[in-house]
Length: 467
Image 1 (cartoon, helix red, strand yellow):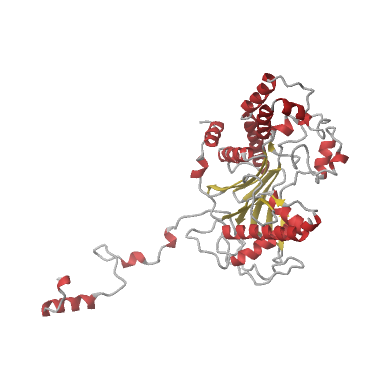
Image 2: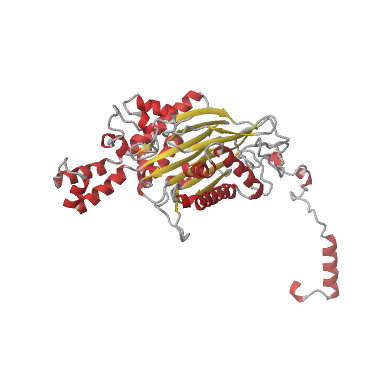
């Protein structure tokens, strides 16, 4: 069965073939649904949850992590998340491939997923075209006139347009043979947290934010005929924030229908990812974060854009000290950011200068070797093998240092091999305790018990239940 057919079947059914893939045990997931802030403080979602995430162990040295941030429904995010796993899982990656070949493999996965998703929209496009033709709506008729003439028809067309506008930002990470590769389209974000020789924690952003704050993206758009000066004062491009995404036919095939995109000589919103890697995972690599835009945008609005990545990483470090599981760490970070944003809104809402809502949030945390003093011990060996490190009770917020907290690191580190117990792990000398009857000698001496048992039996004092 082809990978496309596998994906189509899984998309149509509630159960997916990926349910049988082993998940990475060194990963935690945190999430929160979107929220409209009401005066009565009652929770209310603006729309159903649109994010997707994955964290799989394809083999002992092949791992996959991803977040997908959907818009206009979950259709695109769900399809692209599932199909991307198919493309990577069956990619025929091998140890002889160079970094450039692996990056090209990931680039092709994005391209194939984009093409596959657009193919699924054929029936939707045909139905919309048929509705326009059957009801003979004039091209010169504005939306109000068309709605007044055929309200039911226009509601149906509106629903079809929403389906065509479904798209998704994405950030993915692949670990293979102790190397990390990262790719993204849109504004999902990937952070790698490392320590230097002085145990100072560094936060490195591996993804590129494809939005209207990105000068390279503004230059690309200006080169295809779009007035980038006007875009600098806007937060949206067509019907979305991102300058790149998966899906969203409305802003790609139908970009001429948008005033700010109509002058473009070609499709302005593209699905071409930025790919980086391979980054060797050594003892300095502490943990990896993949997040949808909802997480860091909440922090940006509350504290400003300058220290966002640092703030999120610091929250993770704090929760490593307190939580017992990685999911507990990730969820606690999300919960803290949610409270931060809510408190910020409540203190500023009187100015009517901030939107009374926040978007969906998803955080994927992959731990490499950051210590968890209160962690529940796993029955399996860790997938990144380092010596234990001790975490101090203080963080220097001025230079974001973890001085003297990450010590005794084993420099001979390798990424993930979850091995079963070998013969070398067995108790030494056990073979010397096997007797001539091929039985292992008991470690507890019961001879006195048996002497007393026989004596009581002879004396007639043995309880009847033991006779």
